[in-house]
Image (tube, rainbow, N blue to C red; front, side):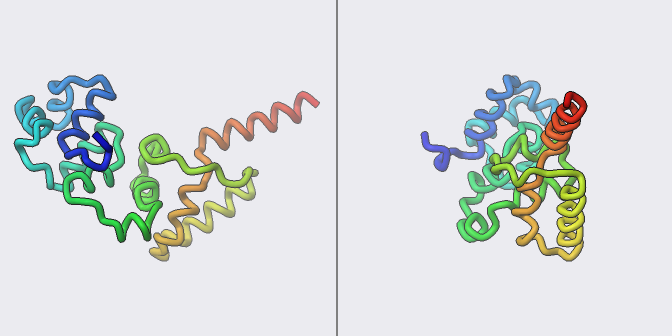
Length: 162
């Protein structure tokens, strides 16, 4: 079945099985019954509450937008105009690893400490000015802390070796 035709229940089942979680485990994490999870997966209970969709997406490590589109239908205007919304939302919310649950974005330019400071300051000012549409690509293109630290350590190691 194409991804676009999946129901919210199909997504729950797919992501749950991808994590090798049992229905019982997901039920405990959601503070619901196993029967509730089974009914959601079979499509017997409607899944339209955005709060519940958000909790499921977060627990299952899935993009919230995918659950929302399956439950409420695709919002082509949003998808066309705001491609970085999910990445930006997770970054603002302080998700520890937004790149792990959103579509990968090509790495930005190589980054030294001063460049990283400047890019961070630019993003910080834009976010506080509520310029979310403009900041989406900048946030999505930022290097992950792990990648930046690794490349920085590689440069330091190379300098020490020379």
